[in-house]
Image 1 (cartoon, rainbow, N blue to C red):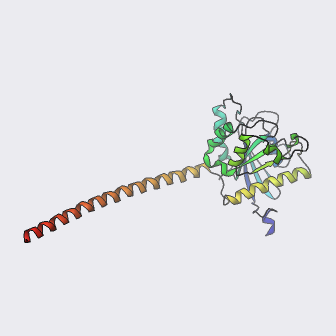
Image 2: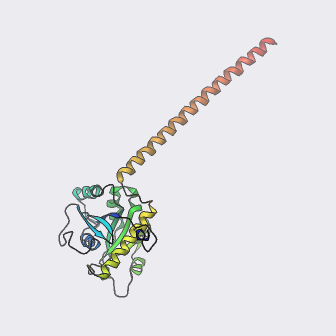
Amino acid sequence: NSALFSTQGSRRLPELRLILLGERETGKSSAGNTILGGAVHFQIGQATEECSRKQAEVSGRLVTVVDVPGWEGGPEGITPERVRREVRVSVTLCPPGPHALLLTLRVDALVRATAVKEHLELLGEDVWKYTILLFTRGDQLREGVTIEQHIQGGGRDLHWLLEKCGNRYHVISSLCLEGKRSTVQVTGLLETIEKMVAGNQCEAFSPLMQEIEELGKQKNERFNLKLKEVNEKEIHELGLENNRVIAALKQVYREKD
C-alpha cells in the first residue's frame, strides 16, 4: 500500500511517540503545539514543571508528544534533582517507548554540548541513536541564512552534537503555527523521524530494555570467564595426569631393563 510510505521511501508508521527535551526556554512546548497541529495542547509562556503528554492525529498518524521540563544549560546553572527525575520518567509516559527524542536548540542561542550530554545521557548512552536536533525559532535566522549555513558556522559544540545524533536535524518556525507552511515543516519532521526509525529497525527507545541487554551481556561475559577457568583447570589436570602416565610407563620400562 503506497499510502504506508513517505515520499522519502521510508515506511509511514500508524503511530509515532516523541519526547521533547532541552534547556529551559528553548521552545519545547511551542514545538509540541506545532507538531500536533497548531492548537494549544501545551501551555506556553510559563515554565513546564512536570512532564505533560498530549496526542493528536497528524497526517494520518497518531502522534504522541511528551513535553519535559527544561534543564539548566548555563555554565553555573545547577539542574534541580526534580527536573532530572522528570527526564528519566519521560520515557515511561509513552509505552513501550518513544520512537524519537527531539533535542530542542534555539537558532539564536549558544549551544553548550557538555550540559546537553550530561542531561541526555540520564537516559543511557544509547539515547543518541534515537535523537534528532530540532532547531526552534527558525524565523530568527538572519536574512538569507539557511539552517545548513547556520550549522556550518555554529561552532565545535554544535558540530559535536550533530555528529552524535547521526547528522539528523530539522528546523521549525515559531511564527508558522497553522496553514500550509506549518503542514510542510511538520510533515518534513515526521519523515525525518520515520527515516531514523527505519534505521533503528523500527525499535522504540527503551532504557529498561537497554539495562536488560546489558545485564545479559554481563551474564554472558561472566559465563565465558567461568568456562575459560574450567577449561584451563581441566587442561592443567589433564597435563598432570599425562605426566603421571608418562612417569609410570618410564618406571615399567626401567623395571624390564
